[in-house]
Image (cartoon, rainbow, N blue to C red):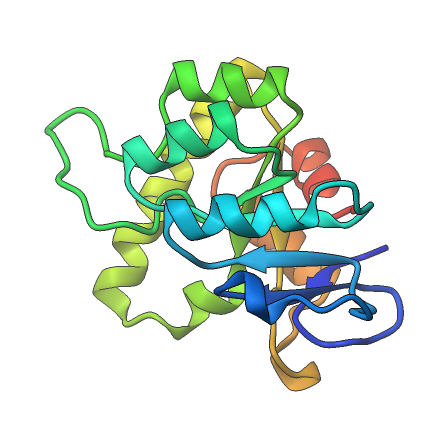
Length: 186
């Protein structure tokens, strides 16, 4: 498989975006679920999905939310942990994860998923802030051997980003060529 999207297409995983446990039905023909909810609702959704062989991706939040999600929830992907508004210090960006969280993610086989379609929608200033946090997460994950993936997560075929574009995006953010090649394979 080459990408993760929010619509059905060949050579791509189809994730269904859910906000409540009522959004999940028995006859869902998706490969996984993208949970965009509060912590309590995310727990209810994951409890309902228990026993299914579907991938579970959780949209990240603040530092406390990300750490509790990684330590207590059974998820496969943490999507955009750098998303939440935070303060930056002089030497370090507050990017949603730290070395302790990254080591825990590596132990539990949880992968960080970079959402390309969301980044493309941002204005220039916010995009620059988001990219500097992603660069910091790449450095942290490289030290902790935590895996990072780059996905389109597009709603339509027109908004998908091909594998070559995602690889070059990874290289421009500081990934090695082998790391960016691995980041685009699912």
